Length: 358
Image (cartoon, rainbow, N blue to C red; front, top):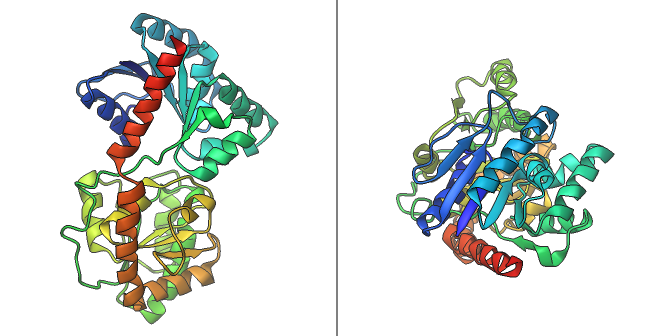
C-alpha cells in the first residue's frame, strides 16, 4: 500500500503513524510544512519558512495547494491521510484528491468550529469531502456527526500507547508527594490554576513537589507566575523533554495533573494510567471515557481552584485509592489503549476504503 500523509513531520504522534505503516511494509510519504527526518519515510518539505497554523488561522499557506496536488499526482498513492482537519485537512480537501482520510486531533473539532461561522463552514466542508474520518474519542465522533459527518464514514480509535515502554515495570513504590503536569503551556491547559492550587497544597504539605514539562506560548507567563507565587523551591520546570524522560517521570511521580478546558483522548493520560501514576483530570467528556472519579482517578472542574486543591490533597493522602486506581487502569489500558491494536484497526479501514474506491 502506498500512503501519503499530510501533516507536521516533526510531531511525535504523526511520526508514530508514519513509522507504523512503514514497519508494515507500506510505502510511506509525508508532505509537511516543517522539516524533519523519519528513517524509511519520504519526507517532502514544502514550508519555505511558511508557518502553518494548526488552528486554521493562517490562510497564506493556501498558495501551496497546487504544489501539494502536483506532489500527490506524482506519488500516485493508494490513499491520502491528512492530520488535523482545519489545517492540513483543509488543504487536502481543496485538492479534491480521493480517497481522502482526515484524522482529527481534538481542538480542530471541539474548539475551532465554534469560533465563528467561517470556521464552522470550513470544518463542514472538509468533513463533506472526506471519505473516512478518524477520531480518538466517542465524544469527538459524536461532534463530527453534529457537523455533518456520516456515522459510517467515522472510525473511533484512540492513538493508544506502546506498553513495552509505558508499563508498571520499574514503578517506584516510594511516596514522594510529587505532582506532574505535562501539557502544552497554552491557555487551554489551565496551568495557572494548577499552580494556584499547588500553592494551597504546600500550606499543608510543605514537602510537596510539582514538575512541569513541555513548552508553549505561555511559557514566559508560567515562569513568571511561579516566581510571583514564591514556588521556586517546590516547582521544577523542565521544558520540553524526550520520550525516555517522560517514561521516567511517569514511573517516579505520584499524581498526574491534566485539566484542559477542551481535549479529545490524551495520549499522555493513557501513558500515565499505564505507568501507575494517579490521574487528576478535568471534567470534559473525553476524560470521562477513561476516568471514573473515586475509582481510577479524580475528576474536577477545570477552573475551580478549591476543588482542584482538595483533589490534590486527597490523592496524596489516600493510599488505598491510589493502589486501586493502578489495578483498574492497568486493565483499561490493556483492553482499549494498545497502540498496535488500534493502528491495526485503522489500517484495516484503509484497505477497505481502497477496495471500495477501485
